[in-house]
Length: 429
Image (tube, rainbow, N blue to C red; front, side):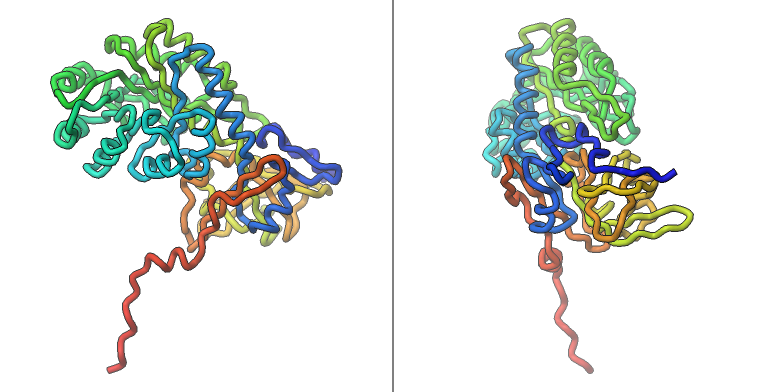
């Protein structure tokens, strides 16, 4: 049965904290009207509420340092590898977790302090190691014995390291996001940890300060985190423990996720119980730092009604691979107007049947030219943006207190062509 939808049907609890509707029912993010933003910057566009992002960073810092003063909150740069985003969270006091020389370069360009950085990677090259050594990051995370060989060969002095270990846990999440089991490509399998600790401690160029463990991503059960902490205790006592990230978020109205405060309380209690109260505690939030603080805006290009109603927008898997890669549900809305509702599939413009943004979702009956917003796209969408069908990667626009600023410009065809090494035309024979 057709129902009448209103602008109030949008679930604002999925949007950045402080998102509102004005008296005409128009959506405002960071105090900026979305329709005015897309008029200025075009679609698709990533819109980030800068104020909400800063509040989330401060909330994380307070939640952990109040419960455990020797805590260091490291933003996982892979979740939104932009110097602008990294710059905001480091200004609020967060460190940075980097997993490649490029992420390290972005963090340094953003003004981040290397003394509040860790450097990861399951396949570090010599160049990666050199970059981390030059920067003098706080810790390099040893993921394998080849890391040990490279560090011993390239370092001029003892290097503070953490050893990434598998806590031998199967996380309750998508298989591609499970990283804490013994068959994972990350870290040292649990039955080899003692041997590798011995190898590292005998190497004079490596200074083993502690352990690292990461169970997985988009985790909604806090007991999985405490199980990882408990597993670390079997490998002996160290001065520092990096417990990774992985806290899940709400993507739809029916989802439930722990709060940052509940997460911090659970983690710190487990650390005090199993590892001691005097240790240095590092955590690496990514998704839970930025996901809710970003939305994506699209324009409806065509509506095709038949066996299903397909509403095609001017983006898709080129700017959001989460759906096709992980099957992640999202909750888009037609914004800024009311009317009858319709159950539709929101699809992208790319030449793939799997190019969907949402399947079987009820929205205000779409029309060509409508604006559609997708909340909770602040994590990993920008990260995995690509040029499928030569799609141009969207801009990143920061919104704060009613003022918008361009953080990353839209990609252009000139950007793509600049990399091409075209052969000169052949003269006719």
